[in-house]
Image (cartoon, rainbow, N blue to C red; front, side, top):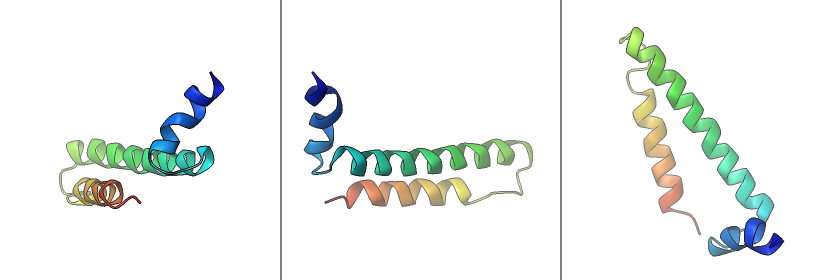
Length: 67
């Protein structure tokens, strides 16, 4: 059960549990930043005009270039 819950998925991307946790948490932080920028941009359109797109491109690049 422990193996299935905590280790099977990270192994599919050739990572340990902690490597996968670090990757996922860094992804989450960037997604939260993008969400905050999008909220501010919705109210004040001249702010963060390219921020969300830049973050999404960065995240896409990271996913596509994983080992």
